[in-house]
Amino acid sequence: MTHACYCVTNHNEPLERLDQPVPEPKAAEVLIRMTAAGVCHSDLHIWEGVYDLGQGHHMTLKDRGVTLPLTMGHEIAGVVVKVGPEVKAVAPGLSCVVYPWLGCGACATCQRGEENLCAVKARAMGVFTPGGYAEYVLVPHERYCVDLGGLDPAESAPLACSGVTTYSALKKFGTKIKDEPVVIMGAGGLGHMALSVLRAMGGKGAVMVDIDPDKRCAALAAGALAAIDGAAPDAAQAIIKATGGGATSVLDLVGAAATVNLGMASIRKGGEIVVVGLYGGELRLPIVYLPLRAMGLRGSYVGSLPELKELVGLAQTGSLQPIKVTRQPLAEVNGALRALKAGQVVGRIVLVP
Image (cartoon, rainbow, N blue to C red; front, side, top):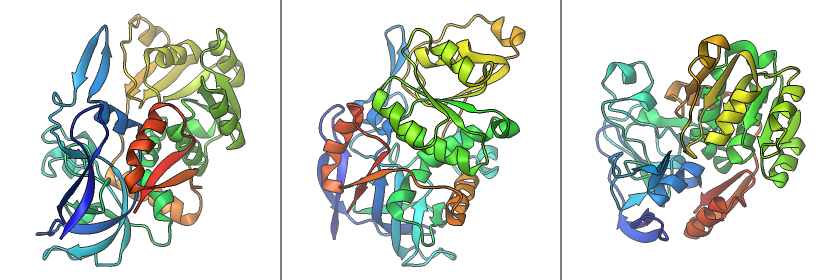
């Protein structure tokens, strides 16, 4: 028996349908039938095969150990259809979202539940191993299948990346998010997810920054306190005004030199910037800024399995409202990627069977 997988066979070329054997689960593996697969902006980097390091330097997917052909898709929801002989807690029929950010599973970092930060062996699904742009997906261990209960799979699939990524990043600001507004750079799908997650965490609110006027309008409609044009010459002053004297927390979902520099120009003393986005470029920073302004600048890479479980729990209580999703057939994946690259997507495109 075979199933359709949509694979990167050559970077920057349309994904190709490959009919491959349906995997047979062994040991504690779980086979799911894909019910939803989110199309994430980081998929564009994998599809293009390169990351911009600035000054004309690049890092390729080959440098990261990624080989082709590759079935992308790391925001995966599905229904369990078959389990390996060692599976104990997962049974056929379970509707689940899959945690994709896998490490070696054995090192001290993985044993702490932080497989996403494993430095021994990265095995992220849809990046290093086959992902969700397929009719069936083999999950390496039952612990990665998080029970959705009655949640909608298409609305829940993005929790595995955009959801847990923004949740983990916002947690790094601590309790400040409840006292001061968070400045969020980027009002695309990730930005809308961050806005929803912030609300579920009891945050005071968000000031959204984006260069696209339509996305700024959508952010205001979604409940943002303010929406600022990041390309405006007075953008930093506008952020300082909107936050009542400067931001204490800046969540950069773009990760470009322009957005990080704008964040540094608009934070108050003791402020923090957490960078999530992978747009790329190079940052030049006067080192004295760090101590003199007591400024924090750090990165955040997706999130942990425990954090995904916490987030799904928030969704199940109704505290986390789903973001806008546009369902498209799996066979239309190339159109979805082109639309995302062109900046035409508000919310999230989710592929369905």
